[in-house]
Amino acid sequence: MVAVAIVAITYGLIVADRFDRSIIALLGGGAMILAGVETQSEAIRGIDFNTLALLSGMMMLVSIMRRSGIFEFLAIWSAQRVRASPAGILVMLALVTALVSSLLNNVTTVLLVAPVTLSMARRLGVAPFPFLFAEAMASNIGGTATLIGDPPNILIGSAAGLSFNDFVGGLMPIVLVVLAAQIVLCHLIWGRSLGATEAARAGVMALDPRAAIADRRLLVQSLVVLVVVVLAFVFEREIGLEPGSVALFGAAGLLLLDNVAHHRHVQTRNITAIYGDVDWITIFYFVGLFILVHGLETTGIIASLGRALADTAHGNLTAAALAVLWGSAMLSAFFDNIPFVVAMIPIIRTIAPSLGGDAALLPLWWALSLGSCLGGNATLIGASANLTVAGVAEREGIGFGFLRYGRYAAPLTVVSLAICHLYLWLRYL
Image (cartoon, rainbow, N blue to C red):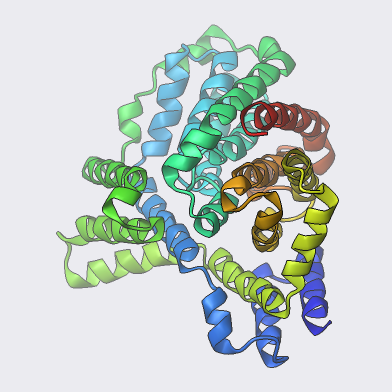
């Protein structure tokens, strides 16, 4: 009863968004220890180091890479590949955003791409909303494709022992279909009516993408390290390293390459700036949530919820998977998907015996990933990437409100989930 009360109050305060979520999560985790639900040693065992290492390592890699100017280069290059056609740019920027979001943090991706998009829209004299909308949707879709693209996937992969290759093989095919469907729908809604003058298009074509590269040496170093890190993810089982170790080692290697030629005081300044770019709010938010949910596990409540879910599904894998897909999507549309996924992981684990063992859980893991990642596209508050794009737009005086976004996003998200429903049913159920 005490554990349930602590979790209910903590989650309620997180949803209310009156105070910073990391503070609330840490206070909730601390309350679990103070109340005697779990000891400090038990709480530490509940913290998933692999998840925290993977997140912080990738954040540092992105922080270093962004200084090279690669994101500005990609935006200009993409626009020129379609001869500065607004309809073509809508497609290209969505594709670029999805691709980058599958390899890097999707929130960081839109934070870097959105300002360049606004500049491009001004040059062409077109409304920026369709471009920003398509990028927000594409970032969440692209992030669903890989282990490292979105925090829910990092959590699921670490908990279920699923590798980078498992995610690529299991989710990449359906993500490509969903992305294609969303791009076609965005083109039908906006693309056909977008137009720009010949003079405006000529101005974009006159831009030099290479001028956007601020540091060529850093660009080469960043790309080499990123390729090595991704290859290590692909062959993680052969080399015997967890993704968290790979990400941290890659970040440390790039930090060394970036600073080896500088004097000691410059190194300290640069490295302090990189560490400062790590989203420590998210890191400590995860720490608090891990302690909270582990507290529920120690009381046996998670096992009881798992048995209830198993009884509801009556041992039917299809019913369980589809319930997880649509249920997680509906909840993720209005609530942060991270605490939901953290809570769902141990529940899914407990129903393995009723479905035939751990091997039978794969469809449930994919359903949880697809529902929690894509469901966040439905509303403005459903995903951090959506709010990030909205913040960039509103600072420039562009309307990007809840109702305007949701009017288009909710129906498109239902289409995405329907495609995923069919995919799971045909391939896994």
